[in-house]
Image 1 (spheres, rainbow, N blue to C red):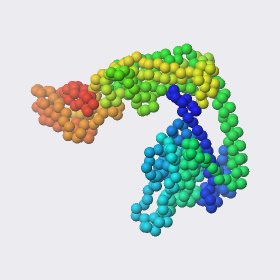
Image 2 (image 1 turned 60 degrees about the vertical axis):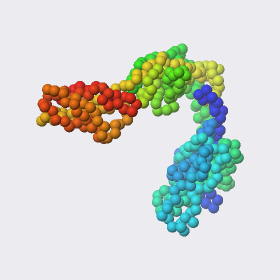
Image 3 (image 1 turned 30 degrees about the vertical axis):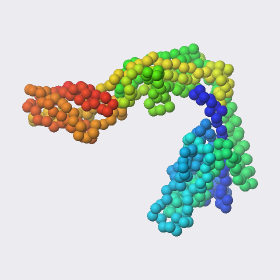
Image 4 (image 1 turned 135 degrees about the vertical axis):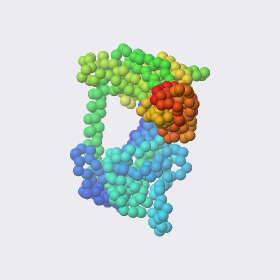
Length: 455
């Protein structure tokens, strides 16, 4: 059990040893066989080596499953795994079947995958490829049988390789869900090899845990300023950026969660948070060599930026921050990642700021090119938001313009692909181009800015 964002999350881990299917002496692909030699260890550093019986590992974090895969599965393999362990699928995904193959091939190949799956599936399942080992490519029966190609030649256990691994991962997922125990089938030779590698892994893990404990102990307590604002947001319009800065904890322990809220009749209402792409959270602090010797005196300034999208509702907004700072053992509640309970949480909210009704879409100086010559005004008028956020006009949309010289000529530019194009006769070449604010208004109510320029 771990605690994350104020709630308890059940965490389970398990693993099993993947061995060659019954009747298969070992990986059959030419490259892998050459590297494995006798069918056991690949040449490596002599520590955590590649093996003919790789370890499949599973980590369940609440309703999210992470499962390792000992090679490179094609997309059909991952789709199949998801439909077998994720809740909500009516049938097992069987992959692509080549429709132009004759019936005798269809009869020989049959289905790509088994139909076994979980009774109580996860919400999300992710295969982590090339994890713990690399045994080559894993293709479906159809991909393996219908033609010769390099991925087929690098598939280790024959045509059923992908289904064999996926079925083992389904067993592992079932164990993590409490639906049984995943069993490894290991020969005496492989058992001895596995025991040797297990001893190596345990020694490496022990060394790593010792290093992690030492690192945790070296993290200094945060200063008194944690949770204090540094820079408040100011009023903005659409296409501008709202920012907020505060003193937070060391980035060794702190990854603040920031929520953007809007004031409504029901109170402060969540709009977005830093788990999405809408809010960008960064930390900045002096380089290590420039920091004070007293590590506890370090201040970490955290900043959040909100690039206001083109359809954001106007009104009053604020940022709310929940973060973590280093304290002393016992300040906080012991967790999986902080067994000493040395981390403490902090919260703060920014001052409210106003998003104006609509920002003006500015003229693009780079892409606007209008000129007067030989009694005609021709060229392109282009507007562009500061970041990619505006919906484009449909082709044929007209933009009213005034051509002001000896008199005023009312004209229009017509939109086509990348701008409003203008071609109008004028009495003289000494004219000004005038486009009133709001000559074009996008679907979210954003007007174009006023343009007044000599040609």
